[in-house]
Length: 190
Ligand SMILES: [Zn+2]
Image (tube, rainbow, N blue to C red):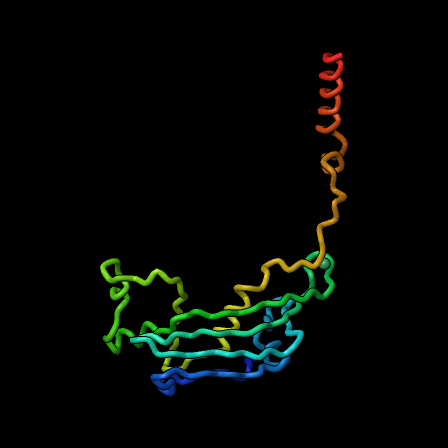
């Protein structure tokens, strides 16, 4: 079953020189489709809709993406299996570049442009690629959500019932041995 989310894309050539502001309210359904992983038994789903405020600004051969939004996603806790919610605030600072194939065909920039002899800005940013002149905002949101959501989502602490002695099946009791040593040392002190 294919559950491709409704596309949320921007054509690169429609971004004016002065930049483009995008304000979009994404529904629970849209966001749930976005993070749905059909192959996994424990998938994420959106708890509420989200308003995203994005700004796209042309910068030389790249397009800078800033802005973001707040998302609340839920998935079963890997320990207790109860549904656990996690809030994630995305704050993009990404430079979008035409995909590799387009770079070579176009010939305007190459990866060598980023070699050591070119001054690099101190500011850190992420570079992402887009294909066929289409910036897929859904894909960028999805990738960033999965980067920011926990890999091992838990809502509760691991029960502290596993003492060292229980784990060692009663055969070796290191704490008992230590206790014995302590008694001996105390005995010497007396
Ligand atoms: Zn839990």
